[in-house]
Image (cartoon, rainbow, N blue to C red; front, side, top):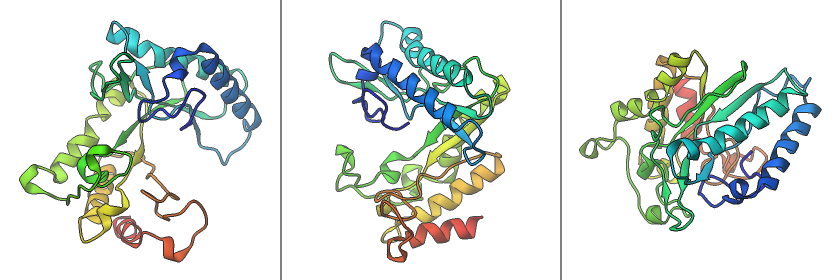
Length: 256
C-alpha cells in the first residue's frame, strides 16, 4: 500500500493517515476486504500493509513508534479475522516528522532496533529497504531537491562508497530477525536510471548487492519492474524492447 488514505507516506506528506482516525479505519477496512477477496489466491505471496510509513513526532520515541505499531496490529488482526493463509509484511518505521517545523527525522535506528518492532502474529515478515548510498542510487532524482543535477559513481573509494560499505548497509538489518526468530525481508533496493548511464556503475552496484544477498541468505524484491525512474522496463506497462534498461537486465543476468 504505497498511497493509503491520508496520503503518500515515503516523503513525509501523508500525515493525515495519522492525525485523522477515520483514515486509519478506512485503511483497515480496505485491507480486510482485500484479504477476504483473495484469501484462497495462491498467486499472492504476502500482504504488505503500508509502504515506508512516516508518522508525526510525539513526546517520546515510544509514543512515536506506537502510532505505526498500533495501526499495524489493528490491520493484521482484521486481516486474520478473514484470512489466515497469507503472509503479512510489516515495514520498519521510515521516519517521523515534526508537524510544527515540517522537519523529518530519517535516523534509521531511533529505537535501537533499526526501527523494527514486533506485532502479535505468527505469520509476519519484517521488511526493510536499502538505497545506500543515497547520493548514488538517487542521483538527479527530480523529487529530491539535493539530488537534482548531481551525479556520482560506484564504487567511489575516495568517499568510502564500495562493496564493504554496501554490505554493512544490508547486514545491519539482519540481527533483528535472528534475535527475535522472525523473517526479515528486503522489500526494495535499486538504482535510478541515471546510475546506469555513462558507466557510473549501476551495474556494479547491482552485482555487489545481489552477491551480498546471496551470501547472507537475504530474500529480496528489486524495485522495480515497470517505472520510468527505477524500472527494469522504463515505462508504466508492457515489455517494450526500447524501454528495457539493458544494463540492469545484464547485471541481473550475469549475477544470477
